[in-house]
Length: 76
Image 1 (cartoon, helix red, strand yellow):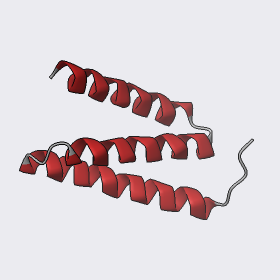
Image 2 (cartoon, helix red, strand yellow):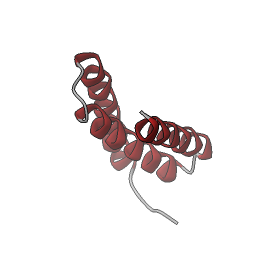
Image 3 (cartoon, helix red, strand yellow):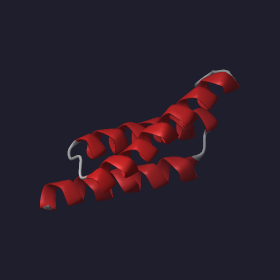
Image 4 (cartoon, rainbow, N blue to C red):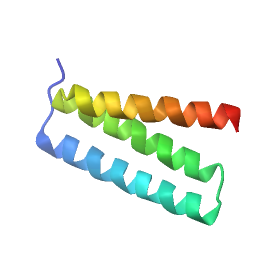
């Protein structure tokens, strides 16, 4: 069982959100692989938030997004 304060989840979710927004911007600018690194950091961060909150929907969503991103990276 993970014990944490709400401040930890708050910090992680905002850092992950900023990373994902940076990934969108990097994609728009054509900055590869920076966009993938930022998206990966955001996905990992939100997965951790899902763990901290014990929210399986958040975890599932970000695992699926990571798999889709990985498939796109390998096939593209």
